[in-house]
Image 1: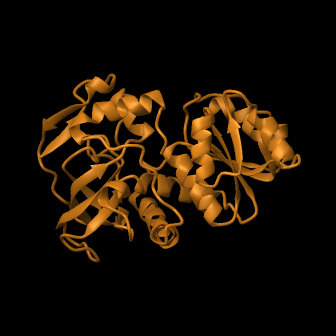
Image 2 (image 1 turned 120 degrees about the horizontal axis):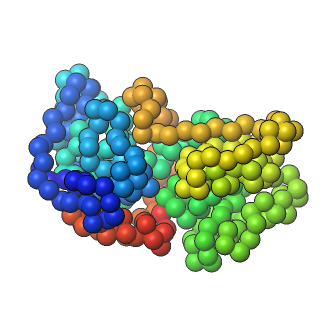
Length: 319
């Protein structure tokens, strides 16, 4: 088969479409003929040499894919050759074939094509596990999403609105904020021009956000805690703004707040399977009835993955 390889870490030009050995499904795995994959920030880090795949995983980038099952490994039940599916991966999505544990496979949602479905598994699993399974966002609460126009952000807006929450977003510029508004965001904050701490306080009559989904990390830590409501929950899932920061614990204690930090790629297979099962139960019906949809900025031939990385590097995309 062919796959995107990274002979040497570097810029987008480091991605090389090359002939590589075909994967074989091990026990409990299925082999998928890949139709499409999607770009995540983790792929950019892997390309730069900063985020190696977990031991035993495919060395190629790509944390999700959609396609058709080509073969079943020993012990797999509930799937058949030819099934149209999408899957959460630890790596290997930028390839013509990928082997994946059966517990991380999802059926193609009703009404979606395979290309669009490739944009679902990573964002749906990340948002559902952090915002709902860990932070327990409830109807009527306020969710603040940093990076509202990102893949994570666009999914978080839709899922939060579907369960009856109020959604605030930060994004860079009026065009991205307009796209967030189209998806249902209630409070629009241009982080280049506005202070999100003040804007959330104004919009909530001083209460603050009940849940914050943060992709920035250290740079926003103190301001996020200031923004939280009493009994608020801060879910950190990214480190685009650095990895180390000081925190006034008195501020955290006074709000009886909680901070969680999670990654998805390196979790044990059992945890990933539990998240995927929850997404199938709670998110897939919302996609099937049209209330939630993947936001695909553009499609690019997989052999030209370098161009896709340039788009994400430049942050000119939505979704």
